[in-house]
Length: 451
Image 1 (cartoon, helix red, strand yellow):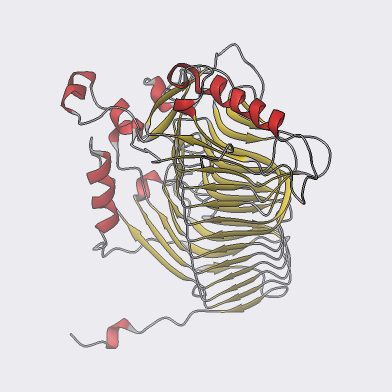
Image 2: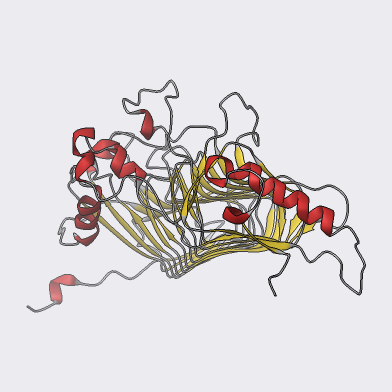
């Protein structure tokens, strides 16, 4: 027996999903609500439904409005491929490419530019007032494609590199519980995921890249996780951003360069950034701001180097190299057992002649910084028209023999009661020893080593 609560968008009798899948899904949602009206029927009543999107290209010209719980929208393939690489290949070479667009179960966001406002051009808009909060809405295994970026008044000669188009993939406006976003692909959206007031949220195993901003957890929230994703924002936006959050787990993510920050915590407490691989072309990789306190930052690999891909060289996020790869404004945070690789061209340092900072405590007390390993070397800027080969070559180059002078830890004067252990030599760490505790990393006597 076929379940009445399983819908295939290609078999629904209202609308054409290839022309406007938004209209079709909204029609399905109307049907679900008309059939599931009773909230208590035989100890059930509103089980929700599954909406299936088979592989194919589906234009979305009408915003999908979700106001029911227990809804899963799923496809059969996240379909990501790099639009950025293609848009920076000369058009006369496009005919030689195996494919031009993302694939799988792909939604093409075609919402009109006339729509204005933060949520107006979101493909999926989730909002419900009253009690209980909307719960258990799931998005799984399909692609949301913003198609094109547009000119934004900047100096970008190629509009496809602006990371600006006003489009959002998934926008959650109201308090929500136990949402799941898994195995999805997001590409060429100014905002991939924006959720307000999330509780017990799971964002897991997605491919979110070439978006202006990737994950934004806004308002406030608790007890959520961002795990095992492949993520990379543009140079103007966040890869992962959270504000006023408690109990957030950011673990096992591979975060690509170009984002203005890899992880940005704004007033976040008692949360974890652990076991991530973080790669950035700019300072400010991880920022704890607005009194972000009692967080654990542990067992991460930080890599800061210079942009090797010719089409996107010359951009930055506006931060000086003295800002720090990890910047802390907060109390009682633990930073332990991280590896930092600073591999940059000294000519790229700003301001000119400055000493780059790795870990910087801007303001705060009782932060504990221990057993972090910092490698700082000088490197040439590699420039290549091939994004893939340029970045791989840069990642594999580790034979620089010339060290780079850095401050491994800088504790600003307004910060007191902090502890810094085995995270830099006497020369590399700057702090007021009268009001902070310090133990230097011993320096090996290289002259006594035999060949």
